Length: 448
Image 1 (tube, rainbow, N blue to C red):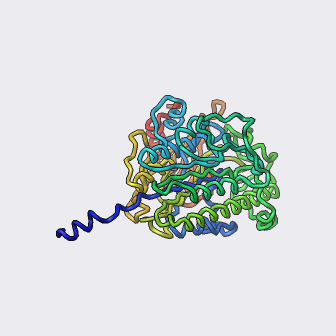
Image 2 (image 1 turned 180 degrees about the vertical axis):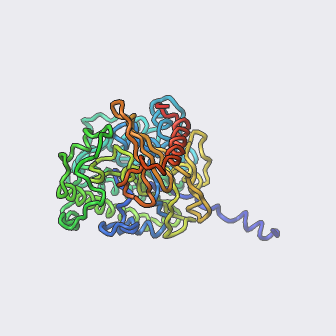
Image 3 (image 1 turned 135 degrees about the vertical axis):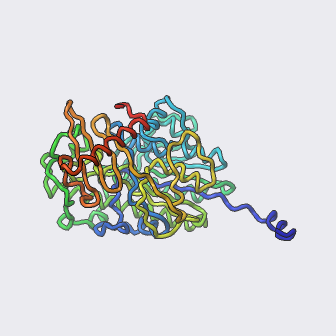
């Protein structure tokens, strides 16, 4: 470099550090985005985000150790740790870092809004500003009890505010838009918006419900009136939302309401993207959209997420922003807890040593990335599974009885044909069982 260029380089302003916005939906299944193949649903703004970045078609959660799967799912997202590590960390038994706090320590302002199902103390560890915030798992979308950020970290229930004329999705979108308008412009920012939609009660406004007439809804091909055996969790609240056996008409109504609430949520995401464009920061902001877990809604005779079928463990995941390939799809197997190290990678921050996840930033830059050869999944003490790109083995232990399923996902993506008793699958089953045991040891599964 000659002297003139050297001096010019010294005088040039340093490149801006990337801002980060994470948009997180509640109970949204992986196959509920129009641009990714679901022609029955209208999601123009998530489609817009897909066009701006990379959509992962095989993002997964590890599972849950309680019926409220969103609690460990959010713990994994925040800590970048696997299921049992993250829940041990939040119980005070393991060291951890929270990604918003980690960004703040590295010079960012931060802002958190929406559902927080991990307690006020941890909300204050994560964020220095925010609100409205809902502490809990679910509530009426009109009149959601929320709190403004309180520096004292005290939130007496009688001080909760309600906004009955505004849906939760609108309320949380408004808060982020306000933050974008008033933020400290001397610092990069990271923001987290955790919507409560499309979790039930599914209360989309009438104009959105009108987009999905029940008689035009198609039943999923793997619809069943009831699950073929006891999976250990058939009496939980989610499964009690409809009587057994499930009827086609009742399931169609659930799907119509679900799609309408997702489309309404999509409209609020559009408002956020528009506000980001107006702020002049869109070209310097990484936007992540993801869901905390999937949902059955009639598939396999189930309604909830307390199972290890793909409809419940696969989640939407889209990443867009500067330096990220546009309008790309990736089938790489990634976990939701890989988002933390990926954000560190994209923002040029060190990854804390407490983080278990692996950065998938190479995919976003268009580089080679193998992804995980297989993923481990668990639900309470009842269910364990291992999934490769082509097969899944699920093992159930209920009342001392063990039931197993093996699915050829390449030929049977809806997991309808159990191959566990096929003689030509013996070696495959043995190999998957061995890999499953290895995973259990690695993640410190208490059942090992």
